[in-house]
Image (cartoon, helix red, strand yellow):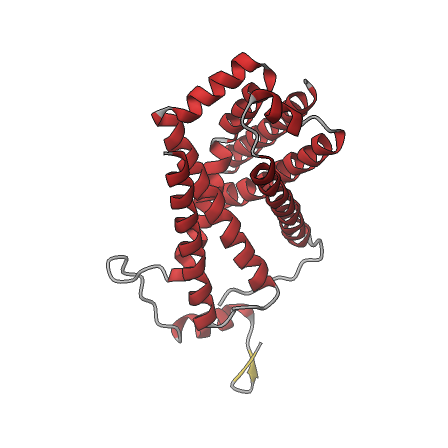
Amino acid sequence: MKQHGIWLNNKDYLQVAMSSRPKHLNLYQIRLPLPGFVSILHRISGFGMFAFAWAILWLLQISLQSPESYEQARTFVHSWIGKLFLIGMSWAFLHHFFAGLRFLLLDTHVGVDLQGARRTSWVVLALSIVGTMMVGTSIW
Amino acid sequence: MVARIITGAHYGLKDWLVQRITALVMAVYVLLFAGTVLVCSPASFVEWQALFAPQWMRLASLLFFLSLFWHAWIGMRDILMDYIKPTALRLGLQVVVILLLVAYAAWAIQILWSN
């Protein structure tokens, strides 16, 4: 690259770039910006759904197999642990869904400025929490 | 800061695109499915099973599941690439994820066509 009128090789470029950038990585003082928070939750919710995909398939299977196994699925869904599972999966799905739509908007250059990115992050958090509460109140 | 080396294979672009296309397929299916459940509100085994009886519903559900598993592969691969540094362990876990997802796909077909 060209810097101050002279051509530098990669090593020199690296040194120039590194010396001119302030570094502040004290984990007790810095915090994740809001869009970063939404982003890591997108990853966590996706991993959570992958980890419990077997349970969803199992529920779908027994709910479709026979009237007896359908009742078994109903009993599970109405149990304490079943409701907790459904609420957890609902949050994971809703957050992943809305945060995913947000990423698609970013891909089309919508909301890429700092204010827009923060605003859409709040919208994603609000929609997923309100949606989870709606699911929670309807099944509890 | 990082000296970038341009490569020409476009591996990343393909996965990026697949992740988004499968996401859109799933979003359309989920919205249509949620709408159908809200309208029909199946309240018994017979009604619930009837929902999955038409061939187009089974095929649409299969497309949803295949999109889901392909999408999950890209996401899990990204997670493993980010956090699992030893190559042998990462490769092993990636193989486990692939085998699991292929088994899930077969399981989904069995569920959808067993009635």
